[in-house]
Image (tube, rainbow, N blue to C red):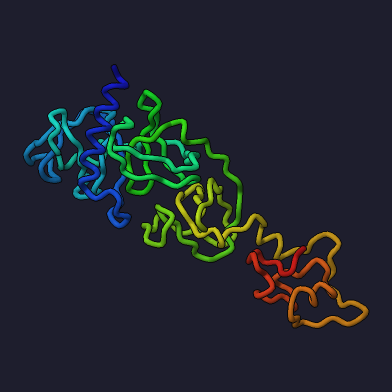
Length: 285
């Protein structure tokens, strides 16, 4: 009974959400969950007209926040009527979710309703990261990618197995989708450690203690920049060779004649053009 009720409420939420142009990255919406049964008001004021009631544990679409301690939300009531109004900020909690990876080679199909007959909202590419808010029964999960919100087949998603990488660029922008048009949700510092959950089309989905979202993958490295710039690999030597070393080299072939294991960024012979992976060490083997 609870599952059926949850499915119905999620379905109503989705039908409304797409009327608000959910595919537009510049009108980013969030999924929230109510922590109690509460009135919905016409204006951000508890003295204004009550236009509906939303029950505890219902997902709603957050449109605007922090208007006189009220949030503008949207949902569909049991009569399939769109309710667009305000509730107190304190009545909303972040909806818990798990990071999942689209594992179907043909793409993860997102539906408006938990049914194969439901309207297709979007087809997400293989390896795309989605937020999985949980199972709604019958093999379906409620998911979100950017402003794409809907139902996807649970078996077509896999658990994330993140790996650690380091930021090699200053002020690396984190976006809500894998696109330059995505909304900026944060900014990472050089040498910061991130957990990479998936990489697709030059973008990596990362999480830190403060942010999560997509960054340009070329600004990440599996090597610790602090370690490579301040120390040298075992067996390497940055002293002049008996044949005489120089500080400017045409290419890595020439440089390795004097420095077989390459050089760090603090060495006079270091040139960024020889550091192809931008990890702070040039011409490493």
